Length: 305
Image 1 (cartoon, rainbow, N blue to C red):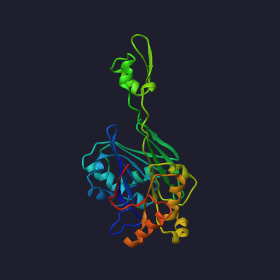
Image 2: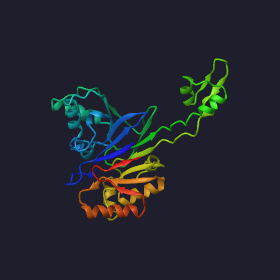
Image 3: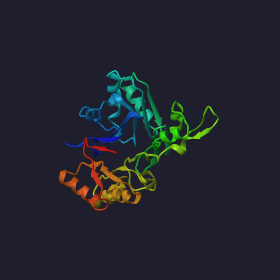
Image 4: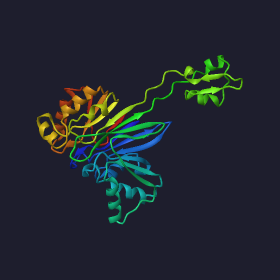
């Protein structure tokens, strides 16, 4: 599992930062999917500078409908179709996302040649499959806005085949059921509980990706105990009041949340265009003064979980 930041700027692009967009790459033995979180203007151009391709996207999660998180979506959807991709794509986001996509395609005379589904969400469970659970939490922003908590399901422990053989359980198709912790009945009538032959489960990885937000009650539950928290830090501490009045957070507030939630690592992003390289270092230093394990996202930064 890895995150690739395609865009890390707030509001407008800069010479070194594109608009907000993050790839979550889930290329693993059990699942092979690519997800995108937000799709600011120029996102498809940023894809061209990576080894990944929009045609491989399975899901796109939109935090809110402000342009710096959304205006790249129509172009990406159309280009994906023109390149002959047939892989289904599902969009998740607040109410209004479906209308935005439909109107943009209709008025531009565009279409998609692949199955496209738009699911407008509210707070709560977004989906839960056998690999991952995604939950949306309401944030504090002028527009309806969500953060997404991504939880990988725990991996079952290793099946103790030697112990099974010792107890007279022959290897075969039943082992797959036993590895899932299920109880099976043998030909001789005995029942075997798979849970008794499993080693400790491997905890799944957890990730919290915030949309734009000022401090809010739901933030703690969204971030609690995650392996990695991605949070906006639009402005420095000295401008905290201005940030909050516009539904944003300061560096110190992002770090304070990471500390309170007990997260392992923090990545701050969504940096105001007012900050040059020296200013960005100041943002990072401010955050690290409260939460040491902080990184400042740069375009094309890759973080492995």
